[in-house]
Figure 1 (cartoon, rainbow, N blue to C red):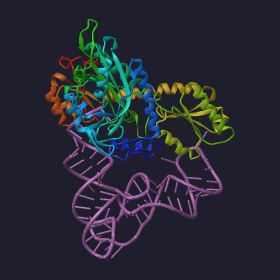
Figure 2: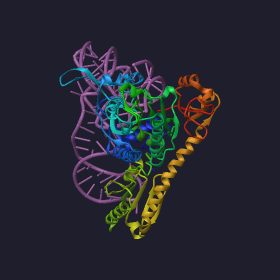
Figure 3: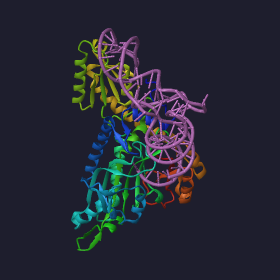
Figure 4: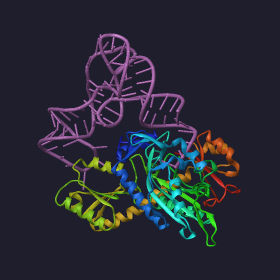
Length: 468
RNA sequence: CGGGACGUGGCGCAGUCUGGUAGCGCACUCGCUUUGGGAGCGAGGGGUCGCCAGUUCGAAUCUGGCCGUCCCGACCA
């Protein structure tokens, strides 16, 4: 395996993270502080995420649209909590076309406001509801401490915005996105065993009445918020006058939701599955599932390799040929750092035996596979690798989560993992106390793993941890 | 934005204390030999030492300011 390529995780996890991003050619820092250049391999992973997410969003009934990057500053100020939450991190355009603008224009930090303005135009009748929109876009938040993928000044995401006739309909839709789109995607594609819960009032989105979250545990035991789905109540409907006429000709305010996942998920994928040899990309999201390597050219090797790629491709496997003429060892290590799940190595020796060598990044090890059985072997390996990654991440989360009954114990446990503590024991005072040790309440859950409808029930449990 | 560390060819570093005009490893280019786990030999190219001032005969080195990166916090997807 690769040696001395990356800083070991145990030595310096943040350094390891930076090393992987550089060596796997995922991204670079942009020229402006906090910005990010996403390189082709990193982009390919994001594209796979987009494709899988987009299909689920559409299956949930939302339609894609696009709203402008620039928003009148006055829009932001209409919802009090929203403006208060976002003001510190806004990028504002004051000059354009060679002169000072009459009204400053903000670069969207999120689009509730512009979309709210248009929702108000489009929802006239109960027949127009629910209005289910999604957009893939870039947003800008001038964060104070940027980190590639996890928190960049500009990031890419999808943001869904919906308007409903009733509270119940809005609530159920936010829940549906949380479960059927986000949790399903993260578990089935990213192989990350996320915990679903609701945010405390302190951690809630600015302008929301309830925020649902998905939290993943990273390789160092810290938590990463991987997506959120918000019930916005009638806050934005009031601010933007989003209303409709009921069947009995009554004017009613809508109930709205918004929900988002971002390029941060790429960071989550890196930290949830990566090891000291580099990235380990879950097979279902991997842009390259199988790298077919010409290990040593010889009689018919290149032709055989091309046939293998074609056969795998026909079987629906994302396979690529590696015919570079650099040394075999380097190419193998490159593939390992990039986390390509399976390598098929072909050389004269293999062909003489009528076989190829299959190397596994996730399960480890190499084995000879008869040519005729390769597709079946690869398919089985990819399925097994997904399960292995998921189970490994789940085992880590379970072994590093400690059930506590006191704030002191929870603070101690959260130093290198997660802790759970009854919310009635913790409360907002305890939450503030933990914050002094950089520990936050990631979410509230119920004993059976379901999401509480309220903070107030006796059996509500707080999951607390250090977080990215 | 507060605390700390660091900015020297693409990457990683030495040189800074004690001022004298820049070096190493990797990478890169060309040639030949190689290719089953980071190939070898030979020949090359590339840096106004983060930026701006100042001190000095002379600054990578000393002084001041600014910018950037990373870590730890506060803020956040």
